[in-house]
Image (tube, rainbow, N blue to C red; front, side):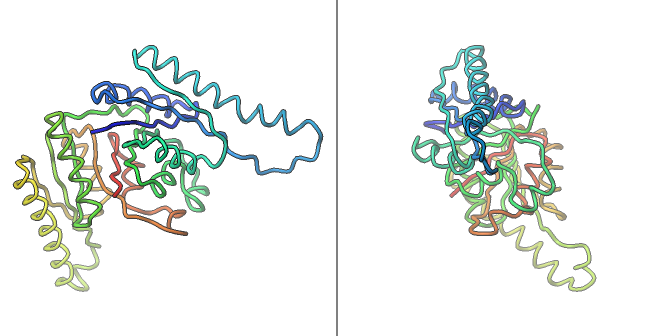
Amino acid sequence: MCRRILVAVDGSESSVFALRQAFPLARAERCPVRVISVVPPYRGELRVVGVKEQLSDLLTDPHRRALALAKEAAQEAHTSIETMLEEGEPHEKIVEEAEDFDCDLIVMGVRGHNPAEDILMGSMTERVIGYSRTDVLVIPLGKRLGLESILVAVDGSENSYQAAQRAFRFNRSYGSRLDVLTVADVPPHLYGISPETAANMIAKARKDLHDIKERCRAEGIEAEFLVHEGSAAEKITEVALARHAGLIVMGSHGRTGLTRLLMGSVTERVIGSACCPVLVART
């Protein structure tokens, strides 16, 4: 499944929790773990002599402490890690290091959301997902990674086929039970305005699921196949909870330019309310 894992930490409780969840996977995969903490640039004005050096220490010290916490956690888990401290735009440095390290997986925790920041530029995790070509495993605080039961959400796109392939690999490696879900995201008012359009959307969802079912059959993968109607993000999180999923696997549509900075995708909404970790498969 993985050759190398990169974990991003910032000293927050959520990032340390995510790191601890990465250790069992790294041991099972027998792959190295690199832990990165990125000091963001200061955007204020520095006109007083000597202030710049003091401010640099203030910005850097929390990230040094974050890496020290990471080393302590690794020792407790009897896992070897490599740590690195970088400076720059955090999401850019994380993505660059994932490519330089040639890793298969970026692991991140979920921090609290600032509504204004969400609207203008999105959270750090969402930025990494938007820019990365590497799979991103997002671990909400307190939600342990479990591979016994996996829910994979598909929508007929190439991104969701990539997600299904990741889920197949987990099934082959760990014997995970798979539930494959597609959601016909039909607005309720559409039934009154255009019943035919609503019916076509449901038919497409069933076709998307049939295509995945054929892929499962071709690869000898056993799974439960589910079709639901409603809000895609809500149904994914509801089904994950009802099916006791330990991991949700889904794709994320590639974004460019301004769309990378805006909230609103199904993936982001699932991450915000998931009952378990979410693996975002990148093409």
